Image 1 (cartoon, rainbow, N blue to C red):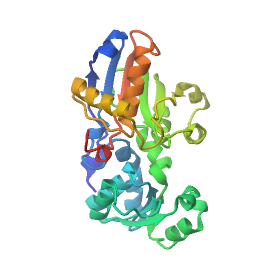
Image 2: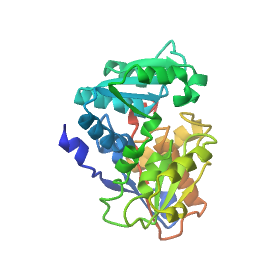
Image 3: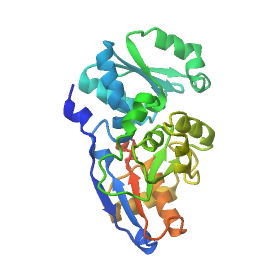
Image 4: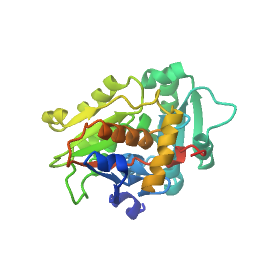
Length: 299
């Protein structure tokens, strides 16, 4: 196993200096987890770390998991399988398209075997006989839920804030399953308020269930807040307004982001700053969760 890849959890922190932030009287920093690894980056690196350590000790041959056509999780698993030499299978939401997304193309090129499941069956997850049969047909593979949502993943995300040399007042993160936020809530001696920006439309109930199911201390429920105003129509959806924001943000900050997760979060942070949501004098830390393989080529 590549010990440098899976045991070094440090990533650089950069200050973001742009007028909207300065005018609000706050300091904004971004933790560049996108730089952890070129193919297994951001929170996917965090989520897979202990899953792969467990895989190596289990004696099994690989991983079987689920995801959509633009899934950063599927892509990261495929990269990890190629890097470490284990088998990977992806169960994909929806019928096989006439033209594969760049994500699915890359997964295939990396050796991942893809199976396509109708959206109605996919929604059932493990309650779907079709999905369960696929998993049971491969007993030599370890099953990881969609988005890497399990306790190993949360354990990896507990390490995101451990190397900071300052205490931010707020920590902001984009949310899919909520696993990354859940892990950060369990950070030892957490002093920050964590703000989650859901990228799925209407996902608050499932997010809250996942976030709060793994809390080590009940009182941590008051240490986070979800703000659901910046999903831009739902998962992997976007508007011209969001894309224009990303272009301008990148020019100002010199930090690349994508339109599925981090771009939406940064839009939300800056919009909230302009509205006076954050107290003047506050320090905000945004987590760059990677996923740059899913960035639109036009950006």
